Image (cartoon, rainbow, N blue to C red; front, side):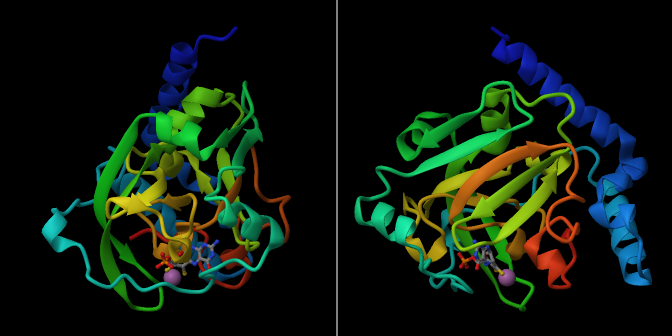
Length: 248
Ligand SMILES: Nc1nc2c(c(=O)[nH]1)N[C@H]1C(S)=C(S)[C@@H](COP(=O)(O)O)O[C@H]1N2
Ligand SMILES: [Mo]
């Protein structure tokens, strides 16, 4: 039986190697594997420079409760049109499970109650949407690095792929996946996460634009590469023309 603490240490050692790689870490961006335009090159450079500047994994700014926006817009999917989702929603997500698998030692499928029983982090942060609006809210959830340590990330894992019930999918390198403010949020502003904002659980990945913070999570998978998924650009929005890496 692998020691969870040992695998956590290995996981964190992996993160600091990535951080130490700095500029060279740029090769983790899927776009760099398939440079097809100057746009890809500039995305890749942005990614590499940000990785260098953020190599110490600094936290994004957190606000006090007084800064919470009175209105937090909702956008795109606000109530997934999916029969499994509707059934789960009708029973307050009691039957909902989040499968976590791929390159992990101990794959599992976690209920909302199991996620809530894990150590929680609350953070009041600014959400910035690519469409030009931003808003501040408080988010409560389990840190993704905690969950990944719990399932035991294998050494070959390089990216975390996430999927949503509405068909959105995205991927994150370990640098962002292991950041202390990357959480799977089930709470917003002290209450359960509302359906319009991604219930029962959404991702908060605070150093990237809002579209990377997937709502309605349905699956998490650790992989060694993402260029074999769909068209090979690493996310649904990247295939629509937005940057895979949306650092802010
Ligand atoms: N599954 C899923 N995740 C999603 C979206 C979506 O439509 N579906 N929209 C994205 C965009 S563009 C933004 S800005 C935020 C919006 O979150 P909100 O609706 O809670 O404001 O969620 C992101 N995550
Ligand atoms: Mo957005």
